[in-house]
Amino acid sequence: MAARAIQRHIRQSPRKMRLIVDEIRGKDINEAYSVLKFSKKRAARHVEKVLRSAVANAEQDALQNNAAFDVDRLYVKQATVNGGPVLWRYRAAALGRAAPIRKRTSHVEIHLAEKEDI
Image (cartoon, rainbow, N blue to C red; front, side, top):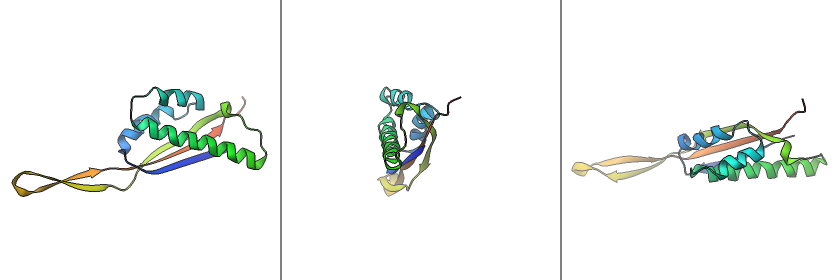
């Protein structure tokens, strides 16, 4: 069983989000929750929200298909962060000029899969 969740237009730069997403990629769900819970980064809250949504999507998919489901067998198969639209703001600069400020946004996508018995 596979499940995914996407959150778009997160007001956090993709560069900072990738630091957190790289830490949970390939880990099982419980370990990923621990990493996110104890992280001091603000991006961890957003990534945890997407991860919880992906787990809920997997549970819902299992209920609809009458499939056996165990949360402990899930792991983060794929986790990506892409850049979203950039919000442009301007700040007053010297000599009457305006300096642009880019407020970046992110799109986060997490795919879960079940571990195969080896």
